[in-house]
Length: 172
Image (cartoon, rainbow, N blue to C red; front, side):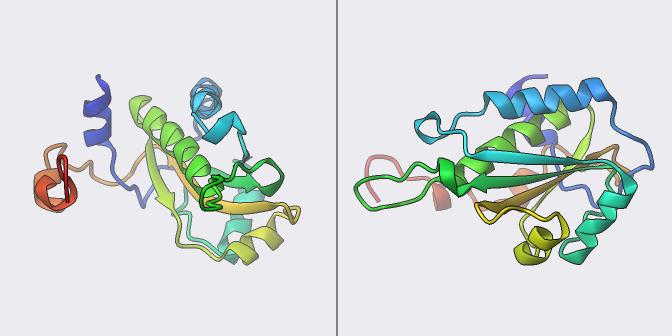
């Protein structure tokens, strides 16, 4: 499958089979995270891999993880942040999101379903997992075998804005 096919195949899974993700697939997903580019190669991401059912329950303090057997809490380490000097923009959210995207697309390529979650209570998650103050939770990525019906790969022409609403060439 080529990259665009993987991108088109991916959809947000909100129901998972009660089946663990194989270690070799987890390793491939983490390898993709390791290869993700970050601003100035600062690599501020800290990923908490959660598979133990008792630890998965901790997410209920601030997030719905849809019964996924594997959840990645993607945090950013404020001690490893690169800031754009012209305007002071901190890049940790962007870096953590690129890492999340690499993991999500790799999981899709491996036949797994995912849901990228940003609707969560960061303070509740911080407390549930006893995160140090320099780590900020940015994204949650649920991963597992989908129990949802797969969506059509050609759905984007109906579910997305037309390209001409989001893309300009040479001027706005």
